[in-house]
Length: 223
Image 1 (cartoon, helix red, strand yellow):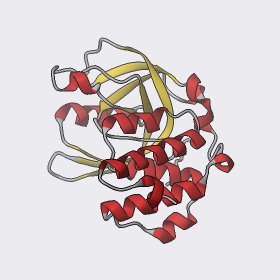
Image 2 (image 1 turned 180 degrees about the vertical axis):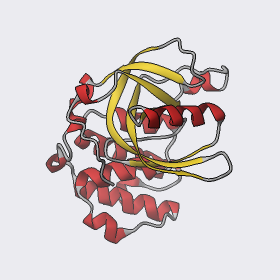
Image 3 (image 1 turned 120 degrees about the vertical axis):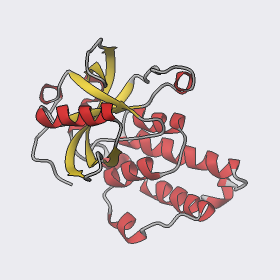
Image 4 (image 1 turned 45 degrees about the vertical axis):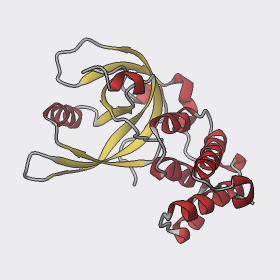
């Protein structure tokens, strides 16, 4: 899904962003995330975003604090997303799609009067995100596809293999990272992987661990 706005670097992105804490969620640059918004505070957040820059930040709450605090701590790396599809349902919900722009690191959470949280963020650690398909040639596509086939078979996942075979490496790695049913820690590791090659390697490693945990033999299955 294309965007009308062009984001060529940090100067094109806001330094203060509204953040949507979502455990186990992963948004990556040029990836797409559907959202069903119904809580009043996040309805307000989307209203404000549409009136201004049309972007929000997706970030995971800290796993240890999310069960203990009304306002859990936030993990320090998230991803900025632009609202590229939007619909009202007529029953006080919004259905929307975010398209990932670039990852950010939280510098500080601000004291605000809005019902939703806002953070000052920096993008300089992730300048590579502003270049589409950067590092694709370094991805071991064969290893990635072997891991996917083994995981799909073990988990009885339905895969659009035609779409997989036609997808460029960036779209493939990021889509698989977002869709695979891994836990919050694994999702964060995929988010924080510095390059596309390293994200693909983390994805293969996590898949092997999941296969071994569920009784498969990754050394045999992934050959």
